[in-house]
Every structure is written in structure tokens, then in C-alpha cells.
Image (cartoon, rainbow, N blue to C red; front, side, top):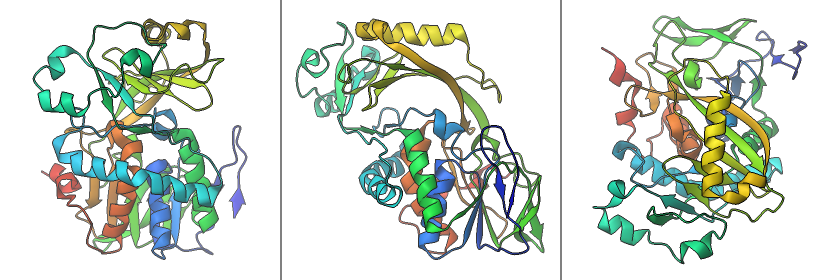
Length: 372
């Protein structure tokens, strides 16, 4: 094992001549880490290779809303979104048991402030999601609004804590994790995958899973049509932890409370390539929209602002399953739903990779749909 020096953390890579693995997972975000745990449970020796620090890209930047309701979820994705949302309590419980870390899974629900035109004809949906109490009682700090309000029985989670727990759980199980190592290509021989090439060394395995998010299409073979979709956000800290109980989603902005008093404010959808810089005017606009909604936030302290790169696809659906090359699999392109879809993605991909029949039909998300 060799250790190279770095500024923020210590990159780690392995001597491929003295270790071997059944599966190499390219990408150490929450999808890759959770899949590595699921594969290890099935008795597989797993290496995760991450270009930077695990969980510091889209996973780290996410808000953590587990939003699976039908108005925002593509119809083809609804069964997986519903299943994954239901899996979350047990998923989080296992990570907590193995890591000892709290990931702040909250179940107060979401208040949806929708434009009337979007829900005026959805009488059944409006009746099903009626407020359980007057809006002023549910959120006393909320400013008066003329927008119709609905209540959604959704959860939220702290993605940064979730990644930290998954990383610790994976290491606890014996998953090997190589950091600060950029995969430059996937290796093939006689028509099947044989491993990966990196900027440091070469690793061999009979199975490779591409979980590289917005970077998933950067290898020479199977150039998956993923693209980065930028999202800017900020976080504020309130002196009182009860300023906001529910997640609030409105046309201009959404607010996601954490149990420690932080409130996340987001977000944008920008086609800006791999640019992760924040724009002061954009952050100010989000901040002011949040203050108009919750005037007390005008007294809150701004903690940080950041931008993340969601992995988008041409049809806004994830890319899941086996490629046309034996031994090469992909799990990427989750766009805005990466945190939500993590449990079901890890479960289904572990089934596919180990030759089991998946619990859900994922043919609609096959990478082969982009093969022309």
C-alpha cells in the first residue's frame, strides 16, 4: 500500500500485484459506496476508485429531499422512486449500526406551495395531500402566501452525513477504497472487461461498474451521454432550531431544515459544463427568496454557498444495468434523484451484477437505449 501526500486529505491507492478484487466500482459517491456495501454483503471483494475525496461531488452538494411524489417524478421512474423511499429507514438504520453516525433522517414531511395552474385540475391529488392542520399552525414563521399549499409525506436526509456513514460502513466491512486516483479508461480483452487503467496504476477485475456520475461518459468505450447540470445552493444557521420544521418547496426556492438548526436554500438548474463556481447574484437571489418566504431567515447567519454537478442524461432518466460488453455495468445519470434512489439502485445493481433476477424491471434504464 502506498500513500501520497495531498493538501486536504491523503490519497490512497493499492498495489495491484498483491491484492485482487471481484468488482471495481468507479466513483466513490453515495451510489458507488452503497453499491460496494451491497456487493460485499453478497460475498464479493470490492475496490472503489475515486478521483478525489469520496462523496465530495454531487452527493456532497445535494439537499437530501427524498421527493418521490408523482408530480415531479417521471412516470417510468415512479416504481423505483417509491420503492427507494420506502427502503430508507432500514437503509439508514444499517448504516447507523455499522458506522455509529447519525444521518439526520427527518420525517416531518414537505409543504408544497404550488402554482395554481400546476394543480388546479388535480382534484384527487389535492384531496389526498390536503394539509393536516392550518398552514399557520404547521409553520408559524412562514409568511402569508396566496399559493395553494399541500402536504407530502416525504422524508429528508443530510447527504453529507449519509456519505460519511456509508464510507465508514464500507471500510468497516472491508471494502477497499482508492482515493485521489483518476480512472483514465476501462480495459477490455477478448470482448470482455478486464479492469481499469488509472493515472497511477492498473487494476484488474472481471467486473467493473461505472458510477462516475457526471464523468461517466469520459472513457473511450461506451461513452454514456451524461452531462453535468449545475446547481447552486447556500446554507444558513438559525439561533433557534425550530424556525422551520418541514421541507418547503415553492416555485422560486426550496428550504430544507436540519436538526442542528441549519437550513439549506436551493437551487438552480444550469447547463454550465463542469464549472462549479458560485455566482454572488444567484446566491443573493436564492437568499432573498427564502427570506420573503420565512422573514426570520433575515436574521440567520450565512454559513456557506456552493455548487454541485448533477449527472443528467438526454431523457432525464438514470442509466442502470449491464452494457453490451460482458462484465461492464453502469449506474449513473440519477440527475436530481441520486440521494433518493440510492437504496434501490444499490439493491438492484447488486442483483444484476451477481446474476440474480432484479426485483424491478430496469430495462427502461438500460445503457443500450443510447446505442445507435
